[in-house]
Image: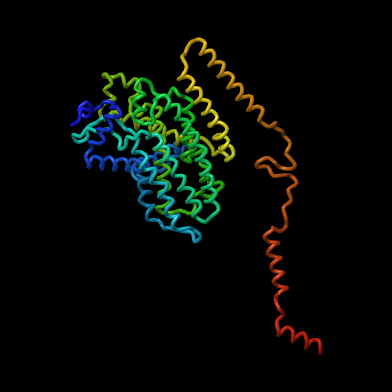
Length: 449
């Protein structure tokens, strides 16, 4: 056994070299066990989250929610999971079958493997083998999570295109624009965390929070929370599947197990972004402040950190449920304006401020300069916003120009261009058609008589 492994005590926070040595020393059965657990976390939490969401939203709306299957209805999600694979599979005649079958797989697979880079705890002992509670320890593990959470949009776009129907296609295009917009905001929101931790490795980021969580990076945390809701297509940002506009959105033409795979991908992505937020801003697996002082930090050793990690993650998951039961769906232009005109500029200004705070030496003069700079930035923001705002008028524009108000002088044509073209083609075909022989003879006889 190497010196690094002998120094890694159970419950300790290992450095990068110790983590690499511990993971390299894992036997095959332990690696297989970790793979199975990582793959099962998403589906198991999905079954739990669905029934929890229906119960919680029912409580918010003063109704019982599911209450028939199992004790108090808590086995409803399990019954749905068993039912969906046996439902009839309906495939549109106009669908591209290969892409149609591939799209749900593209959505689900990246979601299931993204959790492999998340550190769930410190050094523990599993059946006598010391190891760290993560499957992979990569120098750029934060980028791996971002990549896996964004690849799923390809499945949504492919599902919309391959269905051969206009509403799924519109839902797929909406999802592409949405994920691009909010992926940028999400990526920028973690830059401040990377600057503070000095690493893209998630285990190093957790270790950098042993004195104070990165929750004090409030703008980054708030922007990340908004971006993760938009990234996962959840209410009030569920525009790709807006039933009031697009029937069911990108999965309108899907049924049976393929529909269940889209459902699974949505909830697993919720788990991924919540676990990512827990790791970046909430100290990862470290116990909250009052509990961390008990017994000389004993609650940060052994298997206790797994409890703290999942407790923090469930708080963020409840935020998804709370938003769904509270806020109405945004209009699409409002949604895109929030991403491009609010979140991205605020992110860039915040990154500049954090970088400035790290490189300067703080004294009275620098504090005054920083305060003046912040005041100027805030004043410019409100000035530009006020200058760009159009004057509101109570009169209805005669020539249109405002969404969704149509112009008052709108004239609806009696016939559409397609109907005119068809009528013209029928008239041309009638002129080219030769007269029938029998009809010509009857006309001649009538003339003689």
